Image (tube, rainbow over all chains, first blue to last red; front, side, top):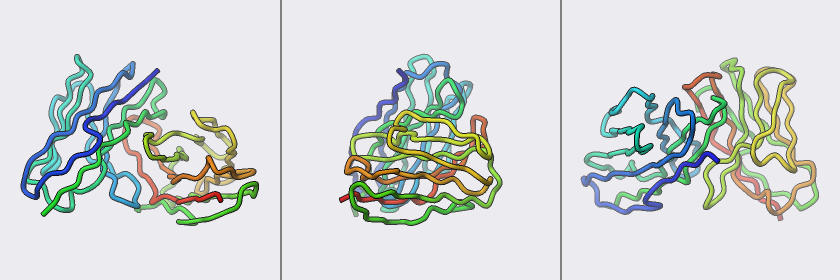
Length: 112
Length: 112
């Protein structure tokens, strides 16, 4: 069964600090991995999509890494801001490209 | 959210009553999806559509039906609502390939 596991489940950091969120997956065959940000009361919004051949991808203060050999990805947030407070969800498509497997998310709270 | 609207945003209904949630798009995407999001679970696929009158079940389809009579509208119906269907429901658009999912803002449904 395809699975996506995220850690930690929740995280509290001070504004301006960096943090790293983890995602482990057991989805095969692998085509790409996506990170989404979900603000409270809103739908998920795409942050980045990483294909098999990409190791690192940045989107502003967000940097995602992918190790396809160990089936791990991380999302690093630099110089956190209060607006980064949200849930971050790791998503991997299954064997049928439209069937997504979602991780449970990491709830990040940035405090002043 | 760009090109996708869910209605209603909130609904409270009684056990045993039928409920229909609507997802409307203005972008002419072929693929549309219904997910539910519950605490402790990642988003889970209920049903999806790959064209007008073409739909298929997801992993948690029991108790739900869908209809897509035109490209822009994808309806989710709970024939007889139960308390276990209390959840936040998200509609999403997809390109049909490996990229580009856009989520709606969600419908919070409470079954009492």
